[in-house]
Image (cartoon, rainbow, N blue to C red; front, side, top):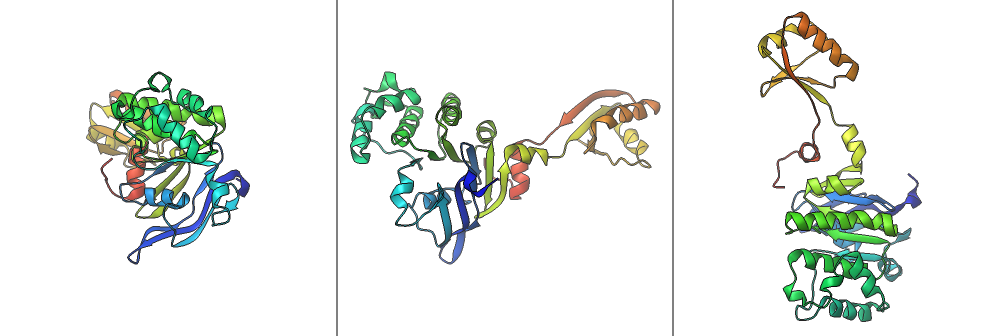
Length: 307
């Protein structure tokens, strides 16, 4: 991918607290018009990285380039006018309605008031626009927060844990909303999350951070391509089945009542079947298994974290 195809690019981005690198020489490359999932355990450095991208936290060292411009005092406003963000919990005036909250933000950002109707429609809050925000559910507040982030018609939307605290219905609504934005508006979205299943269903680009270091960055599809496939056999005699392959090129193992073959080519499966039948072994079941994103994530980060 060409350098100018990246809407965000960082070089050795580092944030140090008390002589410890909480974000350690991170080189992000976020392609345009994609949904980029930024994954990591709690405390891995996700929020700190996003705050540095937005200028909310000063970097210790390294460079940040957004929209082809290096982040500095000269380019700060030019960059931020094209960025919308929702970091941590959105802040509102609870005694005001959704429309009134958006109207105040329009005045502060010098955005035309006609955008209010547009963003309320995008996040599906038109029917609740005159309801006090204090009466909103958590999911409605999250959607209003995204509406606020969309007011300035950003080319880049940065969201830190947008599904945090939502029930399954709210998570589904948020997922559908996020999936629609790049398609309809050509927007690039960076989503920080520890909900691996949600990233798996929304993102096409992926970065995984652990202990402040970026340990994987590429497409989600490429990560799955590196995943080893396993063919699992349940037979009438597993121990005998295993011994039958002792002097062959195959090295299966027994796990949880199945005989497992790793990295087995598709055309080899009939040969395995014939071999087992030739040894009078009955096959009860054959399964193709692949690690999901959670299993791959745990392998990459090297520890079982609370997800």
